[in-house]
Image (cartoon, rainbow, N blue to C red; front, top):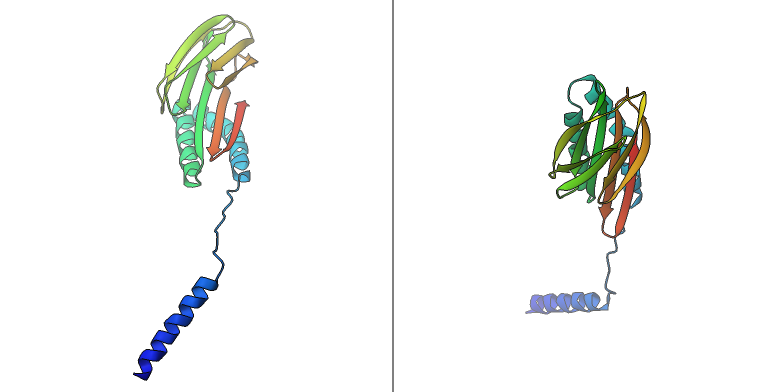
Length: 180
């Protein structure tokens, strides 16, 4: 009978201590600086992926593979990544324009090279290409898409890259346009 009173007393003391404790609130703050670092890393590494693809046959495959790898790495940190890139490779009197899309939906990208306009539709997770004529040592390109675009003067004998990158987590959004 004495043992039962000790057990009841212990439960009573534990319940009084539990009631007397202040409630604890767990607050976690996401580090948004990692999104900036990831955007800077993508800015420096996308041109390297372009060069790797230019050396071995397969610019679209190299860029798409790197973009998918980066999106998976970002997803592992709770970051949603959207990416769209346009690779421009020199040809004989023309440029080969390849558009890659990881934006989450089909995109239509407008490309104007020296006044010749082409709208390129690209399904999500895929790439599409077209060929546009150029003359001279450089050309003017104007790239437009739903989230932005750019206009630039590019050499016609060098592989060039435009990329749009958007990283988001919660209410934090980082956007970057890359021209290389």
